[in-house]
Amino acid sequence: MHWHILGAGAIGLLWAAKLQKAGHQVTLILRTAEKLAQYNNTGCFQILDDTRAECFSTEAELADIDTPINHLLITTKSFAVTGAFASVQHRLRKTTRVLLLHNGMGPQQQLTEENPGLEIWAGSTTDGAYFDSPYRLVRAGIGETHIGRLSSCGSDTLFKELQGVDEQLHLSADIQSVLWRKLAINCAINPLTALFNCRNGELLKYDDRRAAMAQICKEVEEVANALGIILFDRKLMEQAWDVAELTGNNHSSMQQDVSHNRPTEIETITGYLCRIADEAGVATPANHLLLDAVREMSLSTR
Ligand SMILES: NC(=O)C1=CN([C@@H]2O[C@H](COP(=O)(O)OP(=O)(O)OC[C@H]3O[C@@H](n4cnc5c(N)ncnc54)[C@H](OP(=O)(O)O)[C@@H]3O)[C@@H](O)[C@H]2O)C=CC1
Ligand SMILES: CC(C)(CO)C(=O)C(=O)O
Image 1 (cartoon, helix red, strand yellow):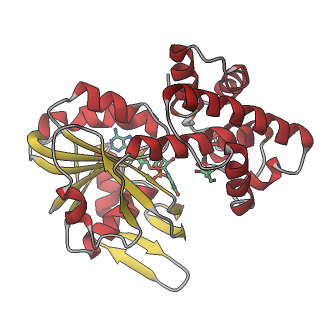
Image 2 (spheres, rainbow, N blue to C red):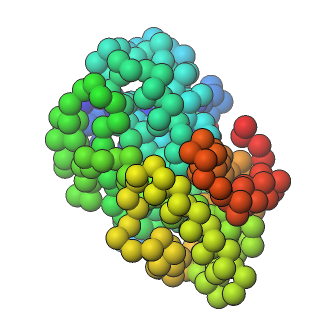
């Protein structure tokens, strides 16, 4: 299959490599002519893991050409998804399949509602990767990726066609719940680490941080309950505690975005939770306070 990847960042390039290794053709869609020239100068990207460095010569192009896209993987940050999608919409056909792989919620539901005839999939991953220099990607952790079809149109054959791309790729029959679980964990950890400017594990070391985390978790559970969403088979606080402990030395993506003065994904994490809670009439005062606090600290994406 020929995959176009929109969002040639850490997750996008990781997937470009996985797809290429499994025999798929891959084209990266870059944002500007300047970025394309810079990439073509380098001619490839590298992925480093514990044992080796691999080079991938993947072709790249801009969004505004007319070549049709049959398989589109969008791996931008959540706040850029709808804009990125719009930039290639003229290249999509009735049979195009779209896979969205990002944290947070909102864009997946919006694109599915606005494009009822399109086969749209969404996913959530615990893979980890970061750049140590441009187009040099360090694979930080091998995680699991769950994908599932959001649109009512289409079929599940895409999953079969992706088998062999990643041993840790799973098909979910209820991808909304998978996205909610990831959302719940991100609500519990990301904004607090940004606010306290600390590593994930440092949320557990102080009474006030633990109390804030417990209150956030309680509100997220109340929203999920009101919507009939089953999160975990134990309390969210216990689940989030384990994730914070397991990733104790890591800086969350939101803490890193705030500390590097980049836009954060707060609007699609706590922002989404608060919006859905307001619509459902569930009070989420601690999440609203946290949303305001992180909005104050980060570049606006609204
Ligand atoms: N990195 C990780 O380990 C993990 C990330 N995630 C999630 O995956 C998602 C992607 O994260 P990550 O890969 O780290 O993010 P990056 O910032 O590394 O990559 C995003 C890429 O999208 C590009 N982009 C943005 N807008 C457009 C556009 N309109 N057209 C084309 N390209 C565009 C950016 O290009 P430009 O450079 O021009 O801005 C950038 O290269 C996020 O939701 C993140 O939370 C989830 C698990 C782990
Ligand atoms: C689970 C967690 C908090 C791990 O750092 C994460 O997903 C993130 O940083 O975005």
